[in-house]
Length: 346
Image (cartoon, rainbow, N blue to C red; front, side, top):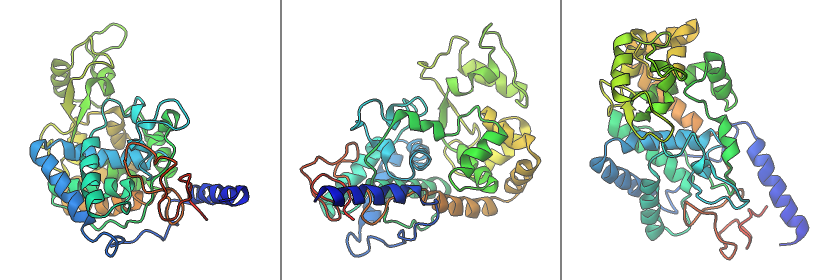
């Protein structure tokens, strides 16, 4: 491919990434129906096998999809262990390491899919399928996943600033989600994923301990009895190297249900950001609604997951189909729609 053509290809992909999140009509349900009809079955088998061994991995896979889509869009950049441009990747950044889980499940699913349909199914579609299957296995909630995403070739530690931290205010949460074309309502809906999984102590340490004196404290909106339980679990000398974890939903930690919303009015939201859903009147009204109606929340959650899965996706000739989800394809590999340098051809 000539220099001019290569420049056009790079420009086309840059434009692809700049499109609003929901304008990509290339994603569709049944995308692999002809090219790899058993793709979703193979992914589900890998996820089911992993969850059977460790129920907590389901929450990790849901979070993996979220952290992928919120940084550079849904492009599997979170899976890359090597940054072609040098420096740390998203995977090695503080919001993801060592807390992000499920990489080995994606690798197992990819291996199974590659054996059945080589060079066909993207890693980012596998992440989306795996998140859906995790939702179904933990919450009996199945939804169709439009597919056709392609994998990105860039992953930078600094880009993880797009992720909402556990210390985010209501305003910051709203702005972070709005930047990904997700509404305030959808932010509250997706926050319900905190009903499954665990978190390291340092994510909520300053809610129960004074970071200067290391004496006990109770953050605003936190139930004192719950704070005492968390202090018993997380010692006062906790650091970012402390690997102790606490369930985000102490009642039903492995079940995707609406209990998260029932815990918030009782002051039992684990993170500062969780409690922020109570201090904003609009958000709190949604919390109350979802606490009273699990079926409503689940339907809204499925819809929001599908919408999030469209965030800044690369489709068509943009991106690539990685052979190994952890690394960008070597320059010697040529796949349909790509030139011999792994750059999408226009």
